[in-house]
Length: 229
Image (cartoon, rainbow, N blue to C red; front, side, top):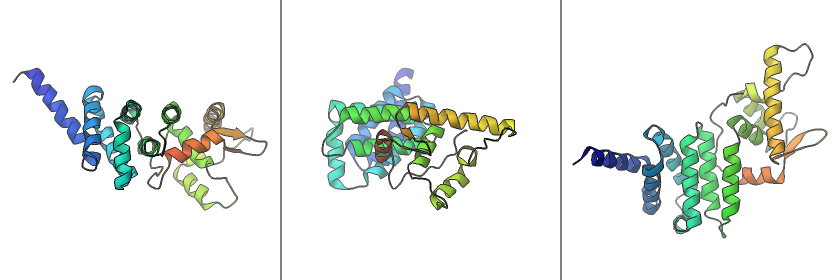
């Protein structure tokens, strides 16, 4: 056996190992993911795809009708393209939260009554364009902030550098000024992308922002990583 063949066999074996989380549930899907991994994903990023495959399996939930519909959709050109895009994004994702969201968009988008390819592709594109801090801010604004909100307080306690209120005093420290500048930049990006609406008193999710959150969040989504401010 040639060195080239040995390398090819190793890649295939590693790719197969990378998708155990979903291959046992839907063999066809596992095979398809392995093919994409073998063709496009560098070895050093296989661990990210492994974790993504497990998250995708959890999102599908083991319901037979859902699994069958998901497999059927992946046999179409549109479905296989969406899976390939999701895997490529997952291989570049550095946080579990982003991998959760990619898996959620695929699981929801490929199991609706009508496959809306352009919608799902657009949502994946929007997700890819946002950094993790912007995604966390969007998650924060997905619930209307109220005085004494334990949900917002818990999120701020876990991500204080990004989410705690920014001081606007003229005598604030350089660190606080820089933190405020970055927070403003993230929020401007969300507004410019049509994901947040700005009113005189507060920021809130736009219809597009609500749609992105609807597709990218589920019961298993948890903001687990603290992004850089």
